[in-house]
Structure formats: C-alpha cells, structure tokens
Image (cartoon, rainbow, N blue to C red; front, top):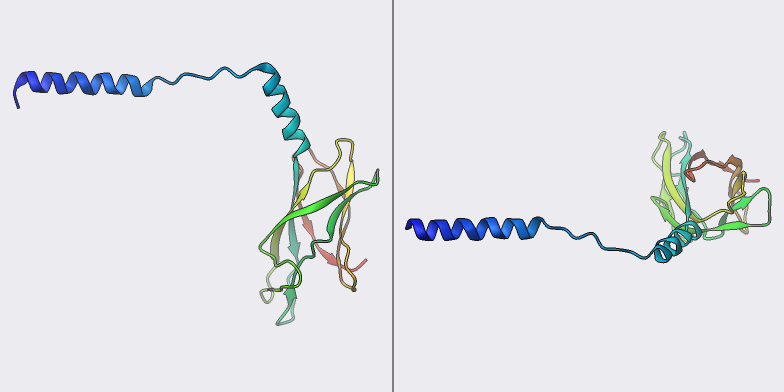
Length: 151
C-alpha cells in the first residue's frame, strides 16, 4: 500500500469517526413534554409480587382469575388485572412445587393518586379466592405480599 493510499484511507477513517460521534439532541416542545408526563401518570401501573406459601401437600395447583382486582379502601375505585406472570389464568392451572414458596407477579391498572391503602381480592364464583387486606400504598407502586385463601 502506498503512503498516499494509506493517508487517504486514514483521513477517510478519521472523517467517518467524527461524523458518527456527532449526536444532535432533538428539541421537544414544552407542551408535548407536559402532555407525555400526564399520560405517564394516567397509565401508571401497580405491580404486585405474590408469594403462595409452601405447602406440605403434593399435587397442589394454582391459578388466577381475570376477576382479580385491587380495591381502593378510600373510594369505589378498583384496578383491573392487566397481566399475570408465572401463574396460569383460569381455566388453566399451574403446578405448585412441593414444600417451596411459589412466587408470581400480577400487574394492575393504576390506583387513584389519593389512595392510601387497598385490598387485593379475587372475585370468583367459588370458595378459595385470594385475598390480601389493607396493603399500604407506597410511592413506587411495587409490592410484595403473601397470599391467603378465602374471604
């Protein structure tokens, strides 16, 4: 490779690198930013990590119904179940490991800003629905609860 070709190649590489490193920050209108912030707060979700305590019985099965809600203790508001992770939705079942706590996650629509505590309640047409009473609200809206049956 001749020196001229090498110098040309090196100059092209340097020019290419400089162009690649230039990042232009976009300007976003203040009104749009404020609008997006409102949407984020409207769409805020509540995440509940649930523990179903270890059981000495073999063959336990677990599931969650779509009719599981978070009930605000200060109003008539109820947050709907949006997604369930690591647990089947009725009518399907998930096997529970023998003698191990079983963890699953439920994601609900947001609670009202002024909510101070809420109940997690599975509203089902049979006995044995999950129920956790008076969960104290926190700023992150992420919770860890131990599930009990029936109410």
